Image 1 (tube, rainbow, N blue to C red):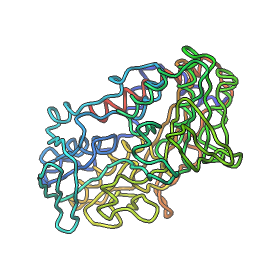
Image 2: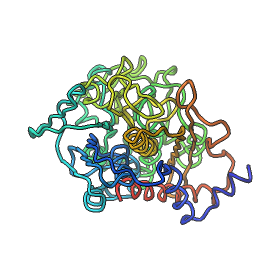
Image 3: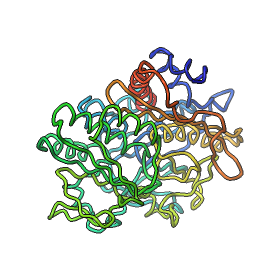
Image 4: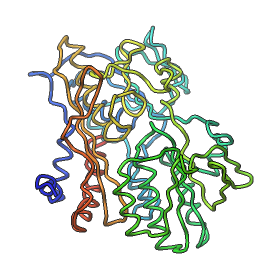
Length: 430
């Protein structure tokens, strides 16, 4: 194994948490702090929007910053799989906005945005409020392409949960797993790319298999995939062979894994030419940018929002920025860490533009940990830079974790996963 990789993996937990906190930071672009008094509105309080709000305040104490989020608390998709696996409870993945409100003096508005007028720069909400803005940042996350799989609509998702927006859907899936009889089958159906958190369905299979192994050992997880390969595939499958032999089966799209029909009443699905029954169905449908971005005319035919990949300003409307899962950010994945990184860069670019300053090109980072068992983790990391073709991977920086490592290293990666989670939620919401 490469000595530098081994050295990195052997960092103490405290060192790693410190490192992960520092990695995505954007340097202050000014020798003195800006005093612009501009009015910035941010829609969406997840990893992208909350981070952007916090760093805008750190860059400029006089900004008027309003963060509009329809939920009183944010439930993270990261570590929601560990909740399904019985490692944590829901409160562990539930974040509030108390620190952003009190320490950073950000106006937190619990409301749903119904209309954005990018010409007049006005926003209307469900509660009848109106907001003007000088600059608008949208971080609306994802929405779903209902009925892209025949029979799978919003109503069906209440019985065959996707749990790809954490919260109530996580609770539904967890309840179904708890109620399932020993010897039952769980079907997980990941979508084709692109979608939120590419390794997520396979970590979910691992965590559900862990729960079943402890509580319902005759049960099985069947993954019916709309793809022929997936992120960190070799590492996942090696671990499944070791920890869950004969308990996790993966079927690729070309081998009949792609789901074409969901029949909730009959509790069956059709994938390829075969009908499947199961006790629990986790159907993850194709995704698109959050509805408000689409309704504001910010997305294109792909369903995602094209942006200037240096600043994240929309290619459709000036003074509107789109970050996180909803945007087209070159080679960057749709992940919480990517959204956090984009939020910081976007904040710096907004302050620079307000003050007539041109920043050097930023770089971005992403790290993704996946738990196979409570004591066995795997990871992938990447550094990104801007090129003429958009945001691309920096060659030789990061990569998938090595295949042949000691159990001690895998155990440390599991610890690092929790350290990463605590670090990024503190950086975003704390």
